Amino acid sequence: MGTMGIMALPILPITPITPITPITPITEPPVGGWILYDDSCGLCRRWVPFWENALRRRGFGIAPLQADWVRARLAVADETLFDDLHLLFADGSHLAGAAVYRYAMRRIWWTWPLYLVSVTPGLRGLFDWGYRKFANNRHRVSQTCGLR
Image (cartoon, rainbow, N blue to C red):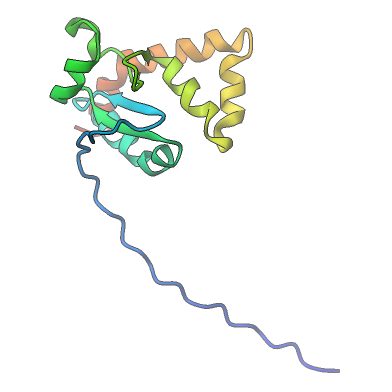
């Protein structure tokens, strides 16, 4: 009988995490549209850019709602502009709130289970309620978590 040897696994180098940089608009809009977030919200400022690579692979760009070009292109009253996450399409139409999450989740294969929950009768209302509660309290959550 032979002895069993232990096979050595290669050591992979650790790649440093690239710091998040503000996104500037490009002349050609992304295929999926721009996901627009409130940059004054600490949690939003960290959460949306954290998912930037996954969103870009699906054709989405990201930008803060505070960008001058966003206000010029997004036809939303200033008093309600920062109430929700927005998705601006190349043709100028847009989605807001929980609908943005549904739209993006439908296009990312590993978020399909959550997408299905978000469109199931009865659970759709619960998803919308959860989004609204969070959106209305996101600044408090950010402050509590020390995300400013």
